[in-house]
Image (cartoon, rainbow, N blue to C red; front, side, top):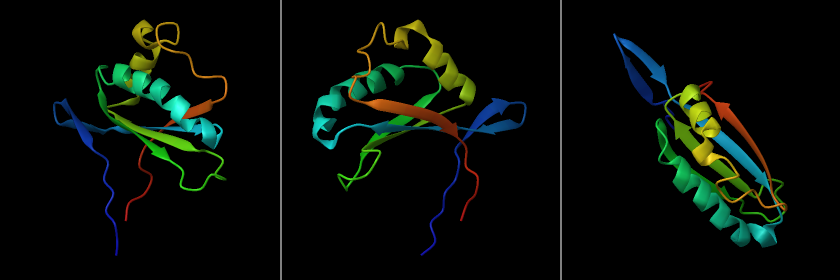
Length: 117
């Protein structure tokens, strides 16, 4: 069975359209500390959800405890600029929110659809 994957588009006006972007954040942390980490993620996700250009956010948990990245966050934004503006907004800086726990390492990156089937 073939799956269909489509990038959502944003109307920029004057006949111009732009695909949104996907922010993928992998988290490396001990499996036994995931429940301790979840409040951090929820606080950050709730705060970022109020930013212009935010679409949605989901956190995925590895099925196998031996997986290197125990958590993977997938969020969708209208554009790279919308995500960068939110990431640089003082309301979303670690000094205002709970800092990333020292037992977790996060590695975020923006992606666009490269292929479809």
